[in-house]
Image (tube, rainbow, N blue to C red):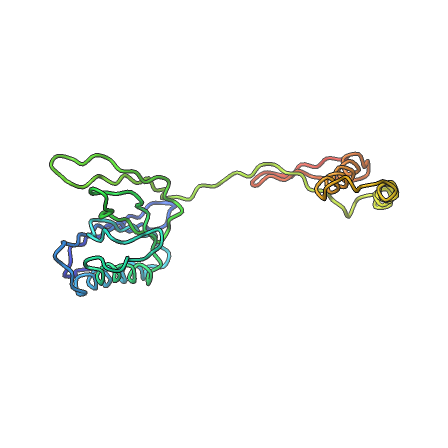
Length: 224
């Protein structure tokens, strides 16, 4: 991965997790030619050839005029061409920039790109160390996906229901409903009235079965 730019990579193999590539990059402020960022792009392209890996690459890119919320560089700013070049590179590799805070005065110079932004839990700035004039960017990143346990929910087994009883109840509701004056009711009120009647018969229909399902657990059956 040797290139003519200041970049270093580290490969982490963690049991039970995807391979993680960590990269650190520095672009001097006087490097405004296309060649320097092309060297970064060359190194990045070789890393991104590992399709199943997660990639995190960050550092001081000295591109403080990019509007990351809109993915654009305003017209009229200095060094606009090189900053647009960086946007084109990360767009080519489908990377997301996750630092949304200033890191030096009012500029966001220190950036972090990743091809897996979902595991990023928190990004915050911390005071610089010693005589440094850049804030520290603190990032929390889950190297292993979290499994979200779903809440138990009830589903009705309509194939085993007493459909005749259900239809009789709703037919009675229809006759009573049509005989009433609803001119004073809103559409939402009428819907709530229908929903209440329907859920009532579901809850009281003795031959209608339901089951509770929870992700990762056995199904539990109940008869009503």
